[in-house]
Image (cartoon, rainbow, N blue to C red):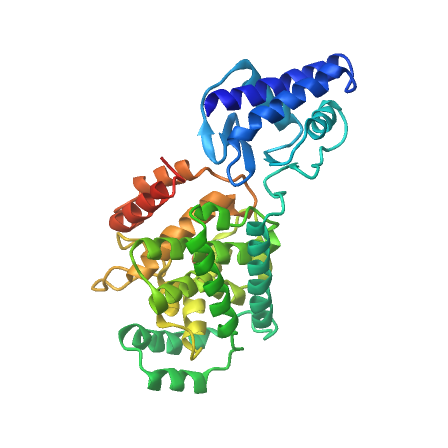
Length: 399
Ligand SMILES: [Fe+2]
Ligand SMILES: [Fe+2]
């Protein structure tokens, strides 16, 4: 494969040089562009060749490309200068199309837009594929579910309700029976979350996961900070399902893990939006408020009769670490977080790193895998980290 990649890039850069030296209409530019297109054909995966630039590194079809030649180095540099982090070439591309793209790149001014078989842009701008449509639909659905919540107008939970609800929460974790649920339903004064909608989103994700081996394709790329909550919810759900499926969970159990992932940060809906979306540093007080979201979330979910208890537990425990640190604090004799919370914690970390907190750059899966390994046994359950990494390897996301 690497020879073909070098062939594509050398031809691309030669076409680029000739275009700058002569003009875009010089016959050599079209000729060499056509050569690049020919070489590309053997590199298509799912009819697409994906080139991603991250710093000085390039990824070809999501795998690191380590062979540096003069051409690849200058290719990376030129694209970066134009603010391009990703280029997708799709089957059907012609020499003419590539020539026009190369010509646009040589211009000092203006942004480079794509054409029918070429998409280029920063990580936010991905080509429209079925995956993207699937993701967009999911996010719209999740957004609607959250909006529904926000309409309740209750951004902050009354402080004194927390203690009562926490003891109810304890019951939820110990014994979940219908009576408790009914009781909580009657006492609930929160707006109901549309659990049917939530289940819909998760079912859709489970069937997509079955078809799609590369979980990363089901994850949404970075989005504006205002959409971060929904994107993150969808991604954590997909990543939790991915782990649970690798553990062999099926049916309702699997569905419940997906719901737990989707709703893990629901408590943030009760914290003023500007605090949640803020990209700059938070004061200690603000940080303490934000740290209440696991408790708020668990309280809220425990009032919903149809919310699975796994979702309540994961909302409550997803920031508790394997070694007993994290928040909210635990009593001395309390056991480790529930396995579902440990799964969600791994998913949460992976997505937070990957998406760069909604503002930064995407981090490569290999780097995150390394970080997870380093903190196995401390922050994360080592067996679950192994399970996750093995599953990522099996789907050839990491080596
Ligand atoms: Fe959280
Ligand atoms: Fe989270």
